[in-house]
Structures are given as C-alpha cells and as structure tokens.
Image (cartoon, rainbow over all chains, first blue to last red):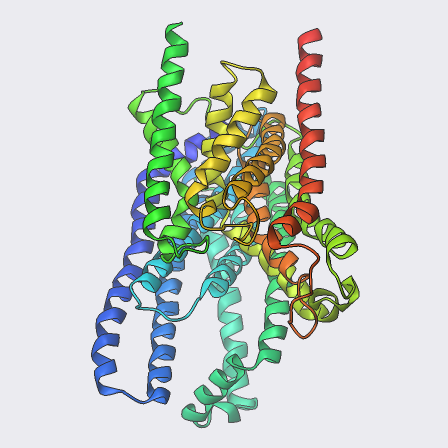
Length: 254
Length: 289
C-alpha cells in the first residue's frame, strides 16, 4: 500500500503542488482585497450598524474564497481515478498482494488527505487575515463543515466512477445534479418562496438567526452529527468501490 | 562509529530547526498568559517539527525511507480505533475524578455538560470532527517526535529511555508558552518551574502511548490522530465540566495546576505505563524468537 501511495505522490506531485497553490492564492488575494476595501469603506461608514453590515459582507466574500479553494481541491481529487483507467493496469493491480482493496484504499486516503491539506491551508490564511485585522469572524467551523461536505460528495461520486468508469460516472453524477436542480426549480415555481420576496428582510432574517444562540446550538448539533456520519459513509463508499471495481474495468476504453 | 556520529549530527540539526523558530515565535508573540497574540504563529507551531524533519532529511541526504509515512502493517485498524478512542475517553474519566475529588460544591449532574445535552453532544462531535479535519497538524508534530527523534535516540539507548528523553525534549519545546502559564495557569507555587516538571511528566507518558502506537503500526498516522484529538477534544470537553449550567465556574478545592494534575494525570500515567510495558514486552518476545 505504501508503494501505491508513493506512486500517487510521484505521479501527481506537480499537479498537487500547482492545485494547492491555486487553492491558496485565491483566498490570499481576497484577504488582501478585503483589507484594502475594508480600510476604504470604514472611512465612509462610521456608525455601528453599517460597520457590522460591512463585517458580514466581508465574511461572505471570505467564505466564497473558501468555496473556490475547495473547487481546486475537488479538481485534484477527481483527477486521481481516471489516470489509472487502463484494463492492463487494473488486472495487474488486482493480482498484487495489496490487491483491489489497497489500490482503491489509496485513492480514498489520498482524496481525504488532500482535503485535510486544504483545511490546513485555509485555516492558515484565515489566521493570517485575523493577524492583519482583515477578518473579524472565525469561520473555522464552516471551513471544517465544507471539508466534510466535500468528503460526502466524494463518497457518493467515487463508487459511481469505479463502477461505470470516469466518463459514465461523471455523466451519472451530472444527471443527479440536474435532477436536484429540477427539484429546486419546481420548488421555486410552486413552493413557498415568501422568504425571498424581499431580499433586505431575507438577509436581516439570516443574520438575526445567526445571532440566535438557540438556533446556533441546534445547527452546531446537526453539523456535528452530519460530519460524524460522513466518516462511516466514506468507509462504506470505499467498501462499495472495492466490490464494484472489477465490474467497472469492463467499461474502460483501453 | 561513523553512523552514530551521523545520527548525532542529524538529531542536533533537527533539534535546532525545531526549537529555534518555536522559541522565537513563543517569546515574540507571547501574550504573557501562556498563549500567543498572533493566530498564525499559534497555528503554525505544530508544523515546525515536520518542517525540521524534511529539512534535516534533505540536508543530510538521509532520504525518506524510514519516515513511517506508510499506512501501517496489516491489521493496524484496531490501533487507529484505539488512537481515536483514548482521547475521547480521557476528558470523561478526568471529569469523573474532577467531580469526585476537586469540585467543592456541586456534582457532575449540575455541570454545563450534563445540563445542556444538545450543546454537549455538539461540542463532542465538533471537537472530534475538527480534530480529524486538522489532522495535518498532528502529523506535523508526530513526524518529528515519534517518527524521527525516538527512532534516532533508540540507536543510543533502550526504548524506554528513548521515550523518556523524547518526552522531556518535547515538553521543553513548549518552554516559551509554559514560562507564561500555558496549560497549568500561573497561580501555583514554584511558578513556572512546577509547570515545566508537570509538562515533562505528562509528555513522557503521552510519548509512551504515541510511541507504542507508532511502533505497533509502523506508521505515524495513528499517533498523529491520537495527538490531534487530545488537543481538540480534551480542552473543549473538560471545560464544559468545569462550569455549572448557568456557565459560572464551580468552586475548586485546588488551583488550576493541581486540578490538572489530579484530574487529568491519572489516566495519562496509567495508559502511558501500560503502553511502555507492552512496548517492552513485545521487544522481549521478538528477542526470544
């Protein structure tokens, strides 16, 4: 298994470094922009409510930067499997002592580790922003939450890729996403959308909820339960991928 | 002889590279209360042993062959589970001892943890999941102490002594923080020397547990998982046993220093001793075979 891990690192080292730098640069740039804009904006706003509003807006911009960092991470994670989609390699790796379990396991562990490195990078940049006085909120829980969200998405995606090969796997994933979009669209057409009627009151309600300790308590609980549930789900996804691997090999083009 | 000299040189380079940045950051950014004013300095402290190992291995052309970077031997799964369970059990055992012997008025059922079950569960879950998410920080320290320093010291001394020396060096590495009251506060006799001694004892027994995990699996990751979960779970969970439901602190019979020693140390010492015995017994069995 260590050998397979070494192979992954050796084959993807440049891609890994470049993508992680990509994940790092965008939030870093955002922090500098926030720092400059914040200083300029403060000159215009001297009352407390506007200052608070400004802090909220800056926090949302920072969270969007985190999302883009996770997008870069997703690109690396998704690239881990297709590079080994060759029948010869698949049958060779099946015959090794490490076998399918080791091969699939390394893909899962690498994906997990890349996500962890992104978390470290984002918390590092957030700490830098706090030291520069550019960011007044601690988004660690949200960064960690996004990490588990990403792991959850990989847990669903990887078995599909292993079962149907990357091409068909991504198509199946796209179909699921399109289906969810249609459900959302139908909801917006026929469901209760009164809360979005006035965007000003909508954001007021969002920030009011975020300042409500009872709401935060419940959310923290469900966030914790969700994140804890992702880990066994990720393991089950691995077991499923191991089971489906040889069936998926038949779909490989080469 | 030549090899031993090389090993000594490697240990020296590693220790210089680990100690110097941490001592500089520790004193420059100290808030005078055992913590740091700079968040980036605080967050990056744990990564310095890993950076030091990488530089040392590159400079001395040692390579990464025996860096314990693999995922471990077959059947290592149970050690990963143990590595996760120990830090979760530690604050609860400590809380029981705390309420049996140290809290003056009130019981464990009156604590914030027992009263607000939603928040208590959220606290435990979030601290565990955060620990796993920032696992890289755990690897940062363990790659230096258990996967590099201990095996190097074992070339000069038996394993138990190597564990004791690693634990002591590891404890003293926290020196700039301890000097201002990290972990044990400031209101105790012999401040800050008492804190240094307590930290050395704690780190020796933790070092025994972490070394045992590393040796049994031949991998640095179980120790890293255990380490980071201790850091995230212990403080957040134990602190909710120290306050009442209305968040006012319980009155204690002792100061923070003795509270830590009486409540947290027993489980650390018992588990550390067991791990030390297990590590030595395994070595003897191998020698007999």
